[in-house]
Image (cartoon, rainbow, N blue to C red; front, top):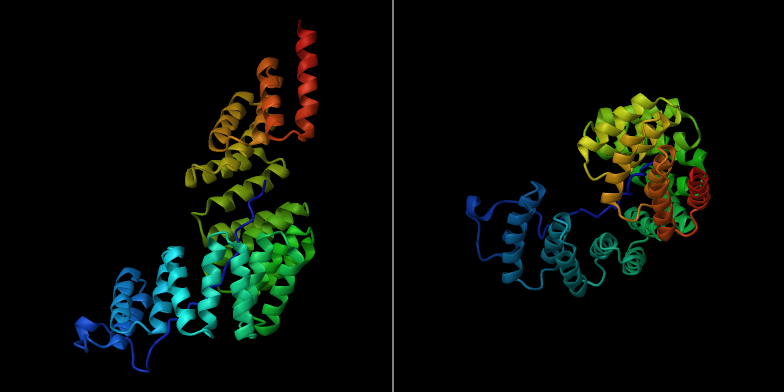
Length: 364
């Protein structure tokens, strides 16, 4: 149950200025309060500082003065996007494209908003339109590739990431995303090569998100059974972001596979401290306690995993196994039956259920 990191959707985060003068704040600079461009540029200044609420207030004023200023709608949409208010972002990108039907960045970012809402078909339509207007916009191919990835169409995803890289050979996100797609196809060597390239492009880790490249390369090494290299990558991911629960979780999995159960438990403990809702960490710590023969602690962890995810068939099955080993066949049977209600094709639960029924009959 390694945790593969989420992919990156790349928004065209270019704020659109309305004229060539530098951004400035209306109140502090004493500029014309009746000029839409003045408010638009003041909003740009706030947005560049990450003060999206003030930026939106200024874009509101720009639009009030000039309702046909496409750039102000785009900028406000981008501010809403960065605030994760995707519905308002889409409304503004709609208005921007209505005023300027060739506004490629607005289509791209509206596609990003649809992507984040899980509306993949509309996202693809917007990225298609972006590419029709600007066939050299690398981010649009990258983003369309992300949608195909999330739809499980890994070949189309890889084709789009390939095109992104042809346009921009230093597009680190595209290598990272293509690596994830290769991973899902089980092509671990190509996945590792792409994660290597991601790290090579950003050797100083200017973008802290690329702790994810180490994390995902580590996951791929784990799948290949190369646990020492996996652990080295998780170590690096943790050095970059010591508060990321998933890196501890994944390193714990690698230690588990090496049968280094004490280190595995220590990592699952830390993952849980950082994220109390990480059901997989409780589940895998429970598995580690089973490996150590500590069935009571294992059951406690499976209980917590099930509280967090009521449909966690594996946790029911493994809690059943712990009960079975304690000789509590009734509870074991109940858990195996619960696992099968969730997943009727759970082969281990079927085998375990029959074993528990036989053991119960023999006990009588």
